[in-house]
Amino acid sequence: MLATDWPAYDASLPKDMVRAAYAISGLFELEPLVGTTINKALGLDRDAARAASPLLWTPPAGATLDAVVGGAESAEYHRQSRTIADVWGRAGVATRFGTVPDANHFTAIAPLADPGSAMVARLKQLTQI
Image (cartoon, rainbow, N blue to C red):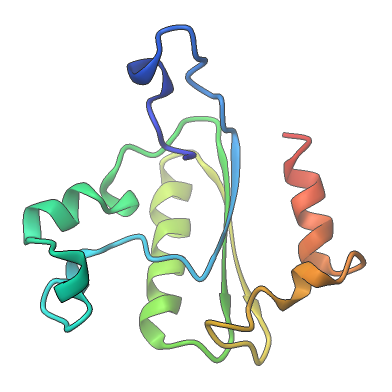
């Protein structure tokens, strides 16, 4: 949503309709999935995977992206979150990479249940951007 060209869908929409995003355990490069069994359900070829990969999209100017991953998640989740933060950061997006200590892919969202957590505090900050 952050990198969507909103006026392409409706000319009356502002280009920066979504100015900030908080990605938890995101996949930003889908091509590595093409050769896996999960691709049976996805049905992606290499070109479709590239087209659907936010890492390869034009980074949204003036936007903010936090990429957060569970500390116990696979190296691939860490690589992808770090990479999008680095690549989009070099392109001018305000980025942060972070980890949720000891969390896995399913428990990385647990801090959302605690209104006093750092995750919730950051989300509140992002709504002000």
